[in-house]
Image 1 (cartoon, rainbow, N blue to C red):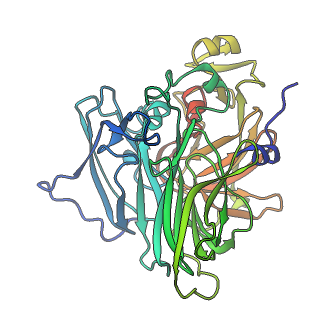
Image 2 (cartoon, one colour):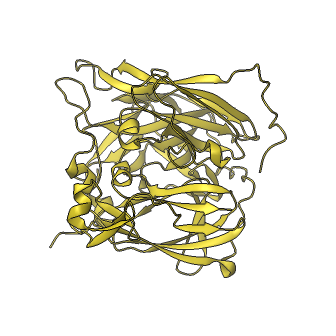
Length: 462
């Protein structure tokens, strides 16, 4: 009998609109964000360069930084040979700007453009990425970072963005291993790379001083890899998850687990002295630890006393009223080592073999891929309570567009706000949210191979 991947075995074995929202004058064209091919040195020096799909020629794409309540205006210019669109991950924005091809917009065709223009209500760490054939387009490099700065930022010496990613490359050519939709990757854990890096570089290094206080914004942009990290030579606190500030900061005392699409904001004090090891370590498959980010310590700063203050809360984040909630069950099915008897695909009930022939390995509550009707419809302001049941043999990072949710604990209390939650096999969990953002919102697994082969659904808020 196949062994299911549990939380324990996995972690052990894995190494509202602002008043600033003024209309843009007709003559003021938005800044271009160009999706195009480029050559970059993803692999270490000595290996060939890699042809990537990128925004403006860099991996990751250009950092977009705006103040809370500010406006993001970008014109997607598609210089690729395929249609594409941009999803602004984690931002509670108007549905028409969410960037989901086939649900909220038509993708920009080759040679076409699409104007994104929206106000950012929430401060925090967010990112943007392609949302047309995401498994391949994000895997080839189409992602970037969106930072929304607090009106009152925390007292730190530096603010560092760390985009964690991996790439599956042919070491002889430097190119991506083809095909992206290999059945093994689609039906198992997803496409994981043989090269791991930060901010588009194989080896990430950072200089710091003893006593320096840093804000580290961690973003998992990988297709499927779950990063299990820990601090070395640094003491830290978690201050935000998926862009949303915690009510009280949490001391980092062990592993930091970041599933695909999740973000973790840390404030850390450098405690290592010059010559001592410091950095961000990653747990490998053999339980060993490897430096993901090496911190070179030289010099001293006067250390700050005490625990950092919580970040300012974002608006409209009150706890949902569970007494008024409608309950739903979302069941994850399929994949290797578990299988499923049947599911509905394009309106037809098919057995598992027939689904595989159509490239569908997974389903959500008996539906493989998108349907014409939503999984659930809500009146604006309704509260949803959803049980997520993972009947597969693999973890899944479930992401809800347009809104944040909270995990409901066994005692009825609720956890911090998130937009992506990690579900482990045979470990049911509950989430709750207030459906307060009108539109059609995608709900899917952010192991992008799983989404591409069945794990996609949507809800509608009237």
